[in-house]
Length: 350
Image (cartoon, rainbow, N blue to C red; front, top):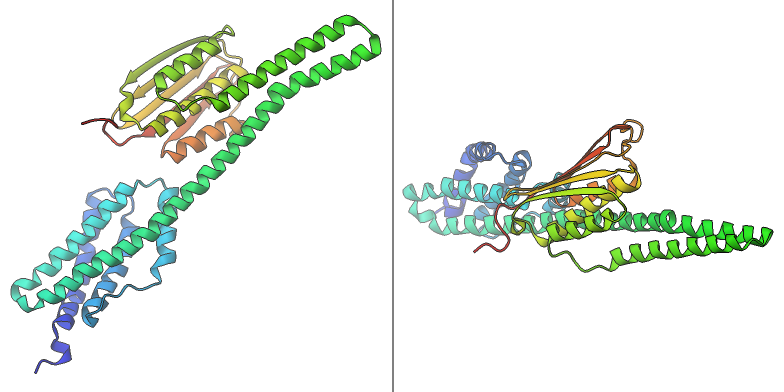
């Protein structure tokens, strides 16, 4: 009669334990060779999964330890914060599955009676990994949603600031002129006040039109139309656009337009630029844009964040896994560089 220690589950569990160090070492080597950005984290998680596998095989019952949830959530937040692409996590999980299955399957050549216990290995791998993926995804998405919320708050603050700076100034001027009219009785003061109010209302329409405009369908056309509007004030603008817009999802094109528009707005409003050069390049791997102006520039050491506008641009880019860099100095204009990674193929490719 077969003793409990000789049961297929126990025998396979012992064999896996004996190979544990080699399985984990091989897995880590494969991760490093693949250039995985989460190698250290993935090995730590794989140790927990392997423990679940051994316990399940030994007991003959699928078991996943419940203490993984908080760790998986934290891992998801960390990956989102580090802008690790979900594809990197999926690749790491596939490598681990391949390593375990390959290592355990070789035992079946010498011990075919362990086939039933091998089924438990596969089931536990799937369940343990799936549960961790769910919690990691929740942590990942929760972090991104919090960032989106923060970006929306920043956008609302920017709109409020625009209303204050661009409309409030005009209306305050109108009020002062009306007050002077009351004091002096001079009719020209009333005319100046009316003009200030008309200009204020025009600025209000400009802001509300921006808020109500339809979603962007073409980055190139959107930029052309915006540059035509800016050029009406006498600013010289030049656009060079290369690449296929199908390489980028619509969400990336829309957010990129807002980032570039903010850079142009800063050049005109704060830099008093006379000439703005805009260069956009779309490749299968990256969307990059460069906005260069001949404006007044600013001291980056004295004002490293340079207000709400640049902070908003950086937040938008970071949510897409990209970056915004700014180079400027007093009297030498400003250069803004946007770079966003893409998936590597056209959105609508066959």
